[in-house]
Length: 471
Image (cartoon, rainbow, N blue to C red; front, side, top):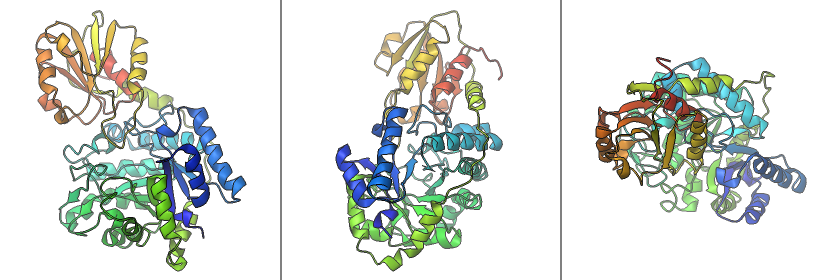
C-alpha cells in the first residue's frame, strides 16, 4: 500500500514543474484543483491529462481521483459550467426535487470533465452572521438542511461523482473564520450533536465522504479541533455509525498551520479515524507523506480498505440533465423583500460594489464583468460602476441607482448607501444572506438574490424594474 493513498493535495506552493515532481513521488489518491490552476476548459482538461499520464504511463498505477470545491454560489472552481446558485438559494426555494436535479446536473457536468469528487455540500447551520458560512448554508432549520443536503448528495452521486458532507460536526455556530484563526465552539455536547443532525441524514443517504471542521469543540476536546480530535472522530465513527471515508479540511488553514506541528497533525488525523489528509499546499503534503511513510502499515489497513471502496466506479444513468430548468429558475426566483420598482425608460446607475473575493474559501473571478455583459443584453440605459469609489458622486444626483452587494452588516458603507437613498430612487440587490435588510433605509428597495451567479443577478435586476410582477 503506497503512502500517497492517504493524501489529497493541491498544487499550490511551488511552480508547476516541481509540483508534478512531488505528485510523481507521492502519487496521492486525489488531486484537488483550484481556479488558479487553469483558465479555461482546454487548460483544465490538459492539466488532468498530464496528471493522469504521471500515474498511468510513468508509474503504472491507477489515475488519481480529481477533486474540486464546486459548492455553488460564491464558492466555485469551474465558473463556466452550470453550478448551483448557492445552497441558501436552494434552501429558500425549498423544492427538494429541484435540489436533487441540481446535484444530478453538477454530477453530469463534473464527470464529463474528468472530475470524480466534489467537496460539497456544506451542511453547516446558518446561525447569525458567521462570515465564512452565510449563503454556503441551506439555511437555519436542521430538517431543511438535512432534506436538501441529502437530495443534493443523492443527485450528484448518481452520476458517479463522490459528495462530501462538510464540516462535521458543524461550523455554523462560531463567528471566527477557520482560514484565519482557530474557532472555539463552547456549547455543550448535546447542542453540538443536535446541530449535526444533517450529517446523520447525509450518512443515511449514502454520502461517500465526510469532511471534519477546523473548529475546537471545547466540551468534546479541550486541545484539538475536530480534524485532529480522537473524541470528535470517534463520535462520527461510533455514535453516527459512519463507516466510509473521512477527510480533513485543508491543513494549510491558520486554525491548524503554525499552531500544531506536522507530526501532531498526522498523528491527530491519520493516526486516528481520518482516512485522507488534505492540504492545498503540495510542499506541506510532501511533509505529511514522509511521516506516513514511516507509519506501521497494519494501522493503515482499514483506512486503505475504505479508500479502495470509495474509489469503486458507479453505474451512471444515460439521462442527460438539461440546464434549461436551472437557468429558468435562477432568473425568476430572486425575491422582492421591499418593493420599489424603477422606471425602465430612465437612465439607471448600477454599482457592482463587491468585485473582490470576501472570504478565503472563495476565489477571484470575473463575475462582475459577466454580469455587466448580461446587463448590456437587457437593452436598458444603464451606466455601470465597479467598486464603491464613485458612490459619493451620486449622493444628491436624483438618479435611479441599483446597488449589487452583500453583507452590509460586515462593512462600513451602509450610512453612505442610506444617505444616497434619500434623494435617489434606489434598489439594493443582496447576493448573500438577507440579514442586512434591517439596517438599510426603508427608502430603498431590497431584493434577495442569495447568490452572485450572473443569471440570478440578472433576474434580480429585471425585478428591480418591476418587469416580472409577482413571479
